[in-house]
Structures are given as C-alpha cells and as structure tokens.
Amino acid sequence: MADAQRLISNRLRRARGQLDAVIAAVDDSGSCRDVVTQLAAVSTALNRAGFAVVSTAMKECLATPEGERSDADPTTEELEKLFLMLA
Image (cartoon, rainbow, N blue to C red; front, side, top):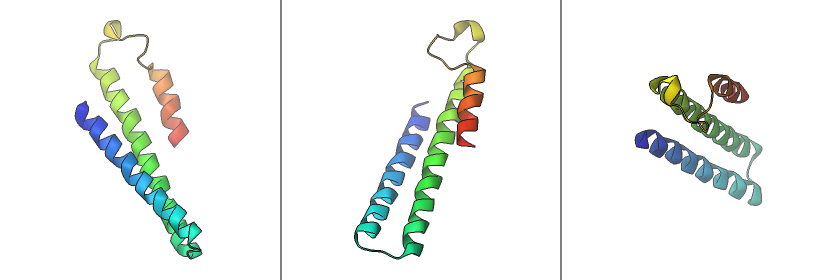
C-alpha cells in the first residue's frame, strides 16, 4: 500500500499549499471570492485525503482474514465511524 500512502501524502501536501495560499490572501486583504474559493479547495483536498485513508484501511481490512488482524487494525465498526466522520 505504499502507492496509497504516497497518494495520501501528495493530497495533504497539495492541501497545505492551498492553505498557504488562503493565509497569504487573507494577509494581503484578498477578495472574499478568492479566499472562499481557496478555502473550498483546501476543504475538498482534506476530505479526499481522509476518504483515501479510510478507503485504504477498508481494502486492507478486507484483504486480511479476520484471524490474522492485529489489535491495532481498525474494526469494521471503527471504519464505518471514521467514514461517517468525513461524510
């Protein structure tokens, strides 16, 4: 799942860059439209990263037989709660 981790990391870096742009726009008295547009982009990027994290965990959960899962692995109930936190 290294590819999934790289994807998630890239999404989070993109969100950080967008957040930096929001902060700069606010500091420079940017227009309301620009600030809100950038905030929406940050929010979307963070949501997509969150869904990717939960999706990756779900795939790993389904791929690992129940008897082979560790205590650190999330249960299906925990995954459902995490998913709903993002929805």
